[in-house]
Length: 258
Length: 283
Image 1 (cartoon, rainbow over the protein chains, first blue to last red):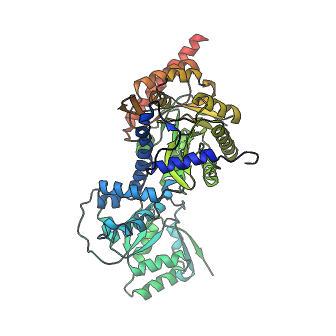
Image 2 (image 1 turned 120 degrees about the horizontal axis):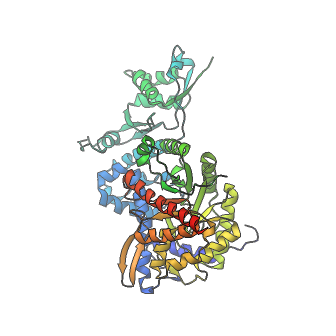
Image 3 (image 1 turned 135 degrees about the vertical axis):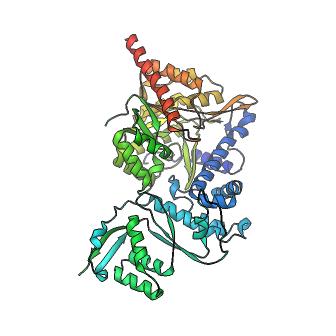
C-alpha cells in the first residue's frame, strides 16, 4: 500500500511463531498471566495446527489411513505436514505431493504400492470438486457417424496408469469391506470420474479402454479413438466403456463434423 | 444489501443435508466456512445452492489472515469475491487472527499483539477486503491462549478502532470472550461492558473444552460440545442490552445429530425472544 511503512516487526514475530510451531523456542514477548505457563499454553497452537492438518490429510487419504493404521498415519502425516505445509487456505487442493512422499518414506519401503493408492485418492478428490458440466442427452448419439463424432468428457474424468495393483487394493479397502488378498505385483489402470449422484467410483480398465478414453479426451472422433483401442487390443469392445461413460453422465457434449 | 435475520442460525454440515431437505427448519440463517466451497463444482456447491435457495446465508472466512504481515492473498480475495457473487450472502465475516506466513498456510487462527503497528496493518487489510468484496464485513474477536508483552492496546479498544477506522462491523463471539477472559484471568462482564455492542452484526456461541493449569482453569475453543452455561448467561445479558441479533450456534467437531443442533438453536432463539420482550417493556 502506498504511504504505509513495511511491518518488519510483525513479520519477524510471525516468522518466529511459525518456527516455534515446529519446535523452536517461543517468540520473544510471548507470555501468559503466569509466564511459567507460556510453553504449556502455546502447545495448544502446536497441537491445533498439527491436528487440523493431519485430519485434513486423513479426509483426503482414507484408504492409506486404513492400510497403515490410524496411529501410524497420524505420525506420518505430522511429518508430511511440517515439511509440505499447505500453500493455500483452500485445503482441498493440498496433498498433491503426498504420493511421492509415501514413495520416499523409509518405513514404508516394503509397501511400494502405497504411493499408487494415494494417487487414486488424490485424483478422486480432484474429480469430486471438479467443475460441473451437465450430461448430454444420449439420444443425440443415435444415427451419428462415429468418424464425424467428437465427444466432450466431463472435467472430472481421469485415467491413471499405475505400476502396482492399486485399483484392486483401493476397491478392497472401502468402508464395510474386509481386506482380501491382492496379487503383490502387476500394473493397473484406473478410470476415475464423478457420476450423476456425485459419487466418484474407481473402475479398473484395460490398456485399450484407457487408450480410448485418452483419445476422446484429446478430441479424437469416436471412430478413431475406438479403432486405435482395437489396434492396441483386438479383443477390445468399445461398447461397455461407452455405456459406462454415458450412464455416469461423463459425456457432456458432442460435435459432429462434416 | 439485505442483512441476516435477527434470529438463531446454525452451521450447515453436509451430514445434515438430507434431514434439512426432508423438513426445512424455521431457522434465521445458515452459516458455512467459505474455504469449504472453493472447489470448482460438484456436491458441495449443489448442496449449498439448495440450502441458499431456502435460507439466509452467512459466509464465514477462516483463511484470509487479516492479522498477518504483508499484503492479503490476492488469489484468495478473488475466490471470496466469486463466492460472494455466486451466493449473495447476507453477511461475510472473518477473524482478528493470522493463519498464513509467507507461502505457508497454517490452518489455525493464530494470535497477534495489539500495537499501533498491527492496528494499522489490520485496518489496511480490512479496507482491502471490503474494497475487493464490495461490501461491509464483520470482524470476530478471537479465543486466545497466550499474551504478548508487546501489546499496548486492550482487545476491546483494538476491535473498536478497527471498526471506527474501516467502517466494518463486529462479530461478537461470546464463547471466545469467556475463553479468553478466563485464560487471562480477567472479567468477561467487564470486557462486554466496554465492548461497542452497537457495532455487532452477528453473535457466535459455541462449546469449549476445559483443563486445569497450576494457575487455574484453561479453556480451549473446541466447537465440539454444547454451549456452556456461563456463556448462555453472558449471551442473555448481552441480548437484554441489545435486543435480538443474528446468533449462530457453532458446532464443528464431534458433530451431533441434527435434532441436538436444532435444540441448541431453539435455546438461543428463546433467549432472543426474551430479549425482545425485555426491550419492549423497557421502552
